Image 1 (tube, rainbow, N blue to C red):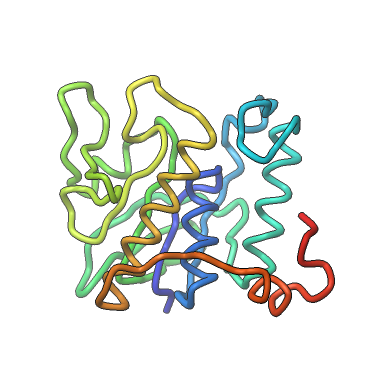
Image 2 (spheres, rainbow, N blue to C red):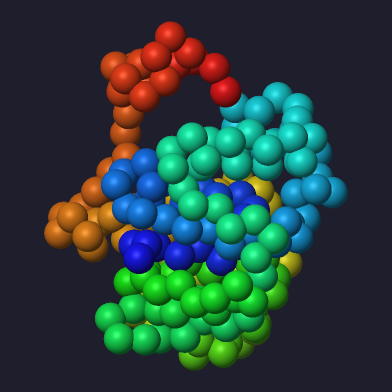
Length: 195
């Protein structure tokens, strides 16, 4: 059983998965590859001078794969429901359970509504600064929580915020993800400065 289930494989979902798995939480991502990033070209993402959106996603997917995230590529989620001490995510292939769920399905808020997450007057999912929704331990990120204010780096930040809040809950104290060069060398060896 995973610790965190992430529904959506764009910048928000993959960032949440990266931060969670990198810090010891078993994470599964469901990615139908329907993200708008395939139509984007990044000029305004810090640290990225100019990159095609699909190439950026490939890099991010490689990162999560290298940290051990279980990525269910092409497996569409049909339902998310509370169950026992967490959530059940249903796909055509089966059911998956975890104590936390991160919804990162872009502007499609159907799963969040079905789960019972409150919406704002603007019709977006109501989430606090940590991206937690009105349903405890369920998070909404990116375009789900913004009315027409979508941007890749903001979405990635939302995913990171959700993961850090989950990590803080699990560790019982405020958690921060800050690596130093020695951490990179330990994780990647001589290739520590590469993408």
